[in-house]
Image 1 (cartoon, rainbow, N blue to C red):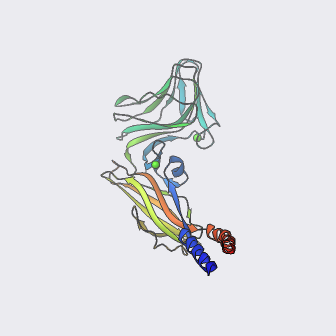
Image 2: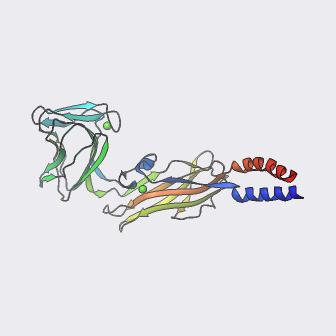
Image 3: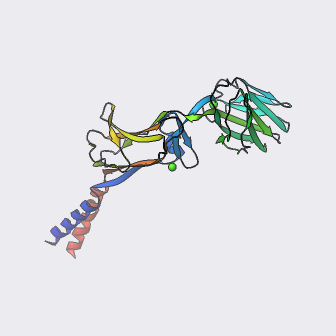
Length: 308
Ligand SMILES: [Ca+2]
Ligand SMILES: [Ca+2]
């Protein structure tokens, strides 16, 4: 009788603790978001957020060398380097003087405005800071001075004024400097009107249920954000539906869809605003291997107790 009670209690305890265990897939950092596939998304280091790209005007990846860049200033030199942030090449810019600059002509001034310059850069030999300018029919516009670090860092310099530009200048100030630069991007004031980001696969490993979708997104006036869930039915990804923050996912069949992924849809009605996604996560349950382990551990224990 005691044995039956002990076993019943043990089974009840095992059942209560763990027919399945809760697990969570989550993304919140820039590195997390970079693992996804996306179009027209801008990812931020600072709080690990995703927003729509500003309409890109110029992107210099330096994959074919330094292209249309030239230098001025004593002994300034340009070359490509294989120490890059993106792709296989970056631009190397160096000099033994104190003040030197690289120039990029060939921007065609149109009615658009340019509000930000972003790039990856690192300092190999010291400069005090770099300074960037746009030259155009509406005059010279200067972006804030920027000190560089010794490892690849993404910088985004915003301008407080707007205008048009026909050329761009990068100046290094006060140092026997050498810098590398990659993926330099000039952006117009407006955002692209739509962008998507598709998450990595979420696999519940044959678990009991899909549970909850959670996300933190801000949507200023003129912007929108929604999440579609796609499921893998064994042969293809198919649309399951649109789900809001906190949505109950228990209606999604785990036997039909062993894997799901999230598709974030970012919209901007007139290019003036973008939604911002700070994190998203999915709760689900996975099978609990500890159930069997607990039973196997518990059985001899119960028998030994009975012998006392
Ligand atoms: Ca975040
Ligand atoms: Ca590159």
